[in-house]
Length: 96
Image (cartoon, rainbow, N blue to C red; front, top):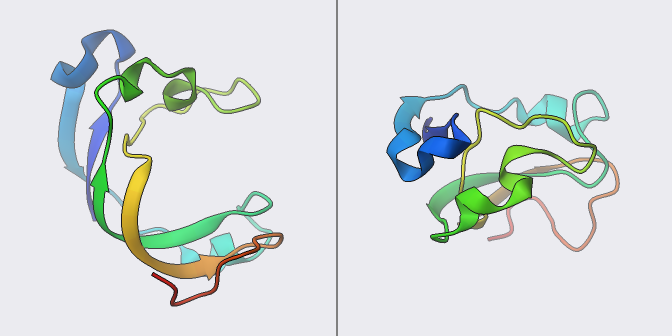
């Protein structure tokens, strides 16, 4: 899959690159192996990000303070749910 990836927080949008990324392993994420509680895999058809998203701490670190780079911005997505991990509620596979 293609994704816009940013690796340097100081570079801002100038540091964004369109790259080929591996497809997510839906079966692995749908199990507890490699997934976090409540994770959802979405086949993204379109994505957008806000102008200040690269300034958000959550773009660069997770809730435990671990580095998230390279980061793929775009918290607004449209697509179809393809897998649910343990604890995911309110959604179903195939739902838009």
